[in-house]
Length: 344
Image 1 (cartoon, rainbow, N blue to C red):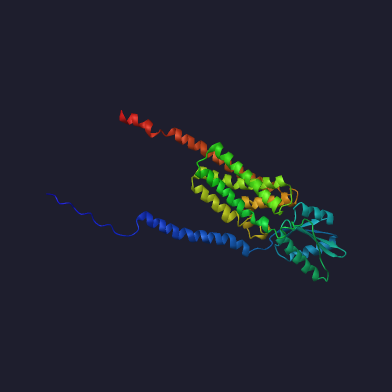
Image 2: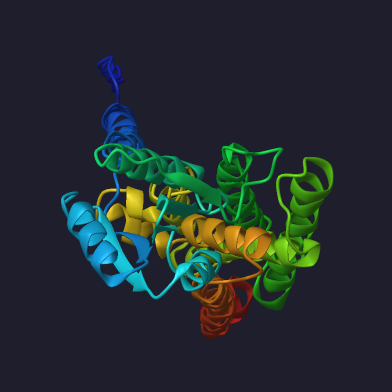
């Protein structure tokens, strides 16, 4: 008579896959926290003018003297020379420079545009006022393009970056999770972005009054900014799978949002943060929104092209991913189609 062998007791403790999950959580969470702290705290701690476009105008001798004094701020300003005050004012209104110092018989006159960046306008005012005081003069400040009275510090516009980024990420992730593909996915992305643009313009312009430009241009800018992110998320997911959602989401939130320069200006961030931020949707969207809202669309072409490329490439990736998936499904026979062959 055979004797049954008693099963050996299992050792307590985490199994292999469970242990790997624990290690992944313990390692990845601190890494994400460190990345977030670096992305947000580093630019804030190193905020300073770096090749900030600044104009000078007036008599040749006075302009030369101003250029020498401004050059003492090594690497802070990128000097543009203009013939007179009218030309310098046009450069400020066209967003070629953030401000201009005009030499007059009464002393220096500073032209600023707080709508472009209240932080930069304040910085220029302090620098020029201090410089004029060393010569016993008083600087006169003229705000050529003023920030709206309901948002003098630009806080509301800067706060719009995060909601737009989150809306784009949510729309792209929803399209992926719901299994929308091809033209249906593209239609959903465009429709969601359009509604976000209308809602955003209704809140920021019509209700809060923090935007002051053409209503439809602002709505289009907000919609394009959202579509750039959502199409990027859905397109990357269509090619890489669910991991694509996390890849684009981390890039937009930790890099694009932190390097956007919305709170100050791209030229106030340490390099290469300022340059990187202008190529990502949050930075490009903020710059374009300032242009269409306060400067009649001046200097909006560059950021508009950046957002358009993100949207076009993202939707293109959605369509390409659908084609590749259809080909794979057609090439792989279903289980029911293989059974008769195996049975025979």
